[in-house]
Amino acid sequence: MSPKEILDKGGYILWDGGRKIYEYTKEKDFTDDSLLGFKHRPFQKNTMIRRTESSIIYHFDFQTNEFGRRIDPRYQSRDKKFFYIAYGCSYIFGTGLENQDTLTSSLNSSLKKSHAYNFATGGIGPNFMLADLRREDFKKEVTQTEGIFHYFYLGAHVLRANGFMEQLSWYSESPYFEKEGDILVRRGNFNTGRPVLTKIYNFLRTVLNWSRWGNFPKLMDSHYLYTCDLISESKKAFKKHFPKAKFVVSEHPLITYKMPPLLTECLKERGITLIRKTLENPPDNYFIPQDGHPTGDFNKWYASEIIKDLKLN
Image (spheres, rainbow, N blue to C red):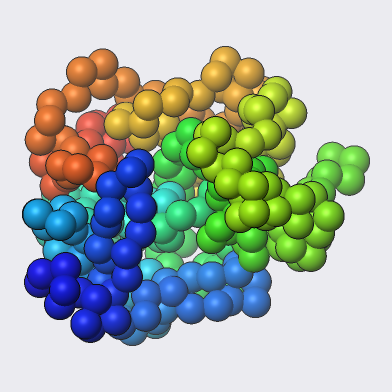
């Protein structure tokens, strides 16, 4: 599909690092959600295209189930004994990839005892995960009663969880929590829970164009500790649904900004199982060209590493 055809069919232009990008989605992907702010729309059979003036970056099809979770129709038998839930953002959802190339599909092609569920949502952070896991009906999405919940961390998740200026362009209606004593209390979203600060950030971003200076505000220890709170509270919420299951956190191996020692030590102190798999010089075929999201080649490699690390077979 050419740039003109994308615009004629209702697509749009965005600017990414000075590049003019054309994006098209056949159907509306996200829908509003009163609890989470947004989520992938249920029962989708969708197509997404992203390209520059001269070349296609990706063109892929995807489907979602009744809960808005991405599925691979080849792996819908849930009669295996254990679950494996992959939770994260677009890196885990499989943005840019056909079904067979996603991480969960790579896992399902090899798993003998577990069914891998893709519970990823593009553009989210651990505040979204906590609100999702606190849903009373969360467990009805999973057939099994035992297994592993695996959250994949990216550095950008800290910015999203703390409602940084640039992230609010799409994330302002996502869940906002305040700490009261030792617990996190839901205070609506970033618009309703901290309205003054959110309005200031939006003014700086949209009127004064502060986005050109990068992330704002400056990352501080308090932001990482708050992220740690969100992750540890997510574990507690998950264990209420599945007392016998395991909760695991991993840095995604392709991320540029690694977890600082403050965050890793905080997670360990909270009893979080942390698995760190480092790739010093990942090959070019592990990244979608001109984009940076993982490829199917990477996911096949990573699936084999996860199976070994977590002893899934």
